[in-house]
Length: 149
Image 1 (tube, one colour):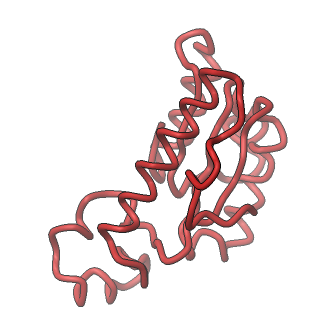
Image 2 (cartoon, rainbow, N blue to C red; image 1 turned 45 degrees about the vertical axis):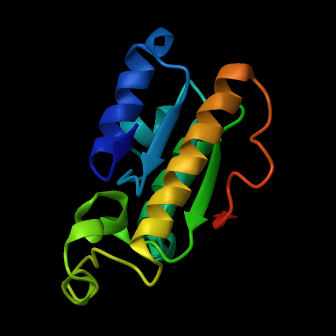
């Protein structure tokens, strides 16, 4: 998996070495349109999870949409409500929220509770990986808080 700029790297790794991966979890993927990452997608099932800010970006949604269209069956794209870019790393768990929510450019914490968001990320990633490995559906309720895009 990957976060932010790590997502195109993860996609390209999956493209180059598809037999090494069962699935990919991509948090707030910085996937630009018409790039290698977007035009080739992910050859294994990919869970694209966007925070509220990335969900609003037409540019990123276009690149992620291109990648999703070309990704393996079982892939999906979701908005994790209440999350922002920094919620996908641990800083929002230890830094004061008044700092994390007021950073310029990219808020490091969204309106949601950081602990609850990390629990939702973990629950969703585990359920998605189990489904991808077992070639079955994601367990009911495992993607609570996730809104399909």
